[in-house]
Length: 209
Image (cartoon, rainbow, N blue to C red; front, side, top):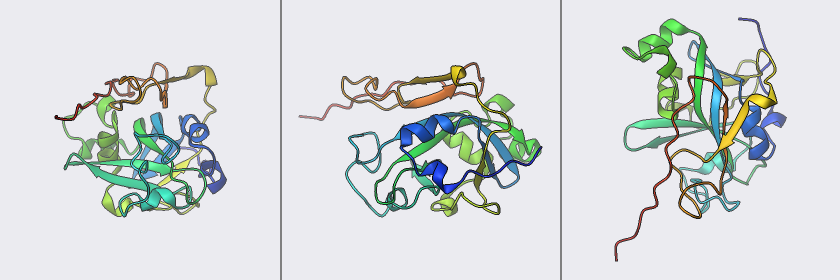
């Protein structure tokens, strides 16, 4: 695979809604596998986004999100999965992009060993599957993605992405005003990519009286 430059700190230090679609087609590199990102979601932290972990302010769990852009925020969910996010924006103002799905473009043997019995299309088709395929976990929380020797790192796309192929819609499993998530059309994906995960609307949980 041709060598490409890793993304700079300034790439990530922008508004999360600029960074998220710009990550499509970029290459996530870690532990012998390279993944072409095909689906992401933006989370705006304290800026009126109740779907974000940082909505109610900084906690020990979310501290990485409040730090410098270009770092990885990895969290454990449902008692069994890790998900990976890229910190964006200004230091002190939490925002991040969830890496939802991608296509393995190098390191197929390693990816297959990490996802035995799973068809290639589904290796990283969803955020928890992505971290398993890429060998990402708790030790990677806070990792600096920037710099030529960084790993994990995110490289620029091998070829430019046609903006006409980028689609946007509600985030998966996240509700919002109205209960359907449409107030936050902050999921971005590449049209026609088989690795993009299936959409599942959020569910509004009613409090017991």
